[in-house]
Amino acid sequence: MVHVSQGLFAISAAIVLVLGSLHLAFTFSGKRFDPRDADLLARMKEVSPFITRQTTIWRAGQGFHASHSFGAILFGLVYLYLALEPSHFLFGSYFLLGLGLLYLLAMAVLARRYWFSIPFRGVSLSCVAYVGAWLASAA
Image 1: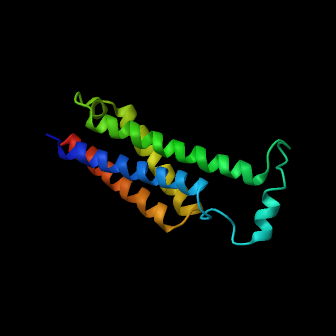
Image 2 (image 1 turned 90 degrees about the vertical axis):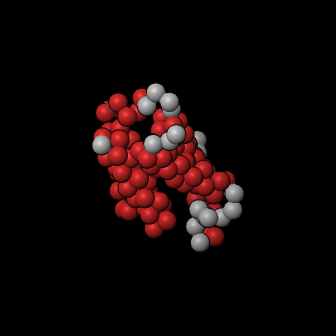
């Protein structure tokens, strides 16, 4: 039987997993991350950053979006596995518990400062579930 703390950790991880998966899908399909200005999009596909001429601002952005998605997906998969793993290894590791919380808090700060309301709400909900799970596991 799944304990409340396991369920809350799993919910927290699943939220990040879903957000990361959607972000990856949106990166390579549709126009959700395209600028609204068609001229700007054309320029982004032509201009390279100062660091190198081997890519363009657009291609670098696509890569950043994808790698960001992979990080969220990895977090979601690993912590979902750890939440449901029978030996309850996660619950005995303050390092992993703290690392997961630090990741989620950092994502919440980034979402609040640089992104928009949907990821901020999703990551905040994941943080609440995570903290609830940690508190439930300590009880």
